[in-house]
Amino acid sequence: MSVTLDGLPASEGIAFGKVHLLNWAIPDVPHRTLPLDEVEAEVERFHRTRAEVKAHLERIQSEAADRLGDMEARIFDPQILMLDDAEVVDGTVQYIAENRLPASRAFHWRMLELQHLWRRTSNPMVLDRLNDLEDLQVRLLHRLLELPDPQAWEDESTEPIIIVGRNLTPSLTVQMDPARVVGIATDQGTRTSHWAILARSLGIPAVVGLVHASRSVEEGQDAIVDGRVGRLIIDPEARDRDVFEDRRVRIQGWEEELAQIARLDPITLDGHPVALRANLDLPGESVRAREHGAEGVGLFRTEFLVVGRSSMPQEEEQYEAYRHVAETFPNRAVFIRTFDLGGDKFPMFLNMPAEENPFLGWRAIRVCLDRLELFRPQLRAILRATAHGDIRILLPLVNDVEEILRVRELLGEEEARLKDEGIPFASSYKLGILVETPAAALDAAELARHCDFFSIGTNDLVQYTLAVDRTNSRLAELYNPFHPAVVRQLHQVARVSHAAGIEVSVCGEMAANPLGTFLLVGLDIGALSVAWPALPEVKKVIRSFRVEDARAAARRALAASTSADVTRCLAEGLGNAVDLSAFSGRWSLSLP
Image (cartoon, rainbow, N blue to C red; front, side, top):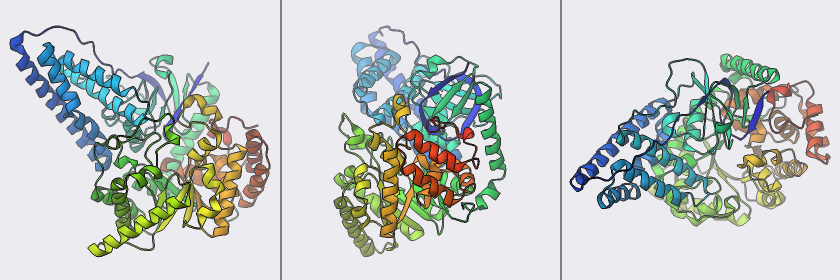
């Protein structure tokens, strides 16, 4: 009998393989007391071993840069910096000198202290730092105890495996061969975890937040990982295997015909065009997105520039990243979202306060407008990138007109400085907002007067409308983008946008769900942006129905009184055009 575990999607894709339980644990550290005359030598041994581990991590970082790009390799900066962090180093040396402890015991004690201190906060970015800290702890302790370097897997088999563990680390992930490691499933972690970002770059499907997966599976069990809906299926039954095989064959076919699919227009059966763009987490993904047929970038997340960093990113570094993506998509729109910090993204250098409800707290545009030393360099870098393409500035979590006006004021000041310095930029750039809250949806008519476009972030709009934390796997069944209240807000924003003559797009996960695609097109939302691996799939869906059928189904959905009625209206309207069973997931479970 199959067992289905629901978590949170972290990396797109679906994979079948044998479970391989991750063997990555802190070794037992024996206790003993050093003779006084050995203390100084032990301190030197600690520093020498620390330097060896640092050199090893720098080699891994260099390999990551070769495989994935310089920006992606910066994910290792936090771990490398920790090896020189005074909190880590000085505390360990003090234990060796004052308590006459071996370096292994002293370092272990110091790590336990820091972990206890950092666990007092529930901020996900701090938890990611704990993840980095544990990785260092495992590596350094094995060397101090003269144990073999631990490995995630040790056999020479070529059989596809799915790594299942409590959590992962960047240094393990970057060494994975996607031909062997076809999927990842972890109890902990977030979509913004350093290792999850690397998994996306490597194209390895991943699910996080499964809570007890590592204790619920056994080595060698068959498993399916679905990184789109956030699901792990253990010992899948015949139907599960059929669904997997169907999707695998279709995706494989699309990959083989990728060049042909990329040339196809995202156009409905009755000739209605839909702009299909890509969501990017890293600059290096832009080339893959273009190969998969993206017509520009609907959401370029910029948090990779600050995740895990101990200092603010420099303007030049940001400019190079933005320029790279703009030049990858000449004559196509590239929507760059300004830093969406807070919530589940807490850079170390901001010293953000612990909050009871971080998703309702100091985040996104609120942080940027309060910390202009962070925001101004980003605005300058984006303005400079406008000289290389159709750059559009996207502001997250805007509720008030005053926030837009303040950003326009800042942009005006930075434009004047760039002119004085003789630095080129395009003054014709566009500025818009992410509609992510009921407040923004209800006030859309007023906000539209000050915007050049709207982009609807359905992930946050759903969680704020339904009061359901989208990062909480226990509430996954309650997180439903087809709730009537969400559907009516989508219609409201689309109607206002058309009346104001500005573009409206959607860049949340809903756009990659077949029923979501059908509904959004039916609401006359003319641009969709999805994760780049999903582009061929979404294009196939768009090309399978008539826009008039979508509009008729959307009208019926708007009159529906329950989520089940909404999905029923959409499923009936889509008919047999798309095999919905191949897209089984948490949002299509309620289909009739």
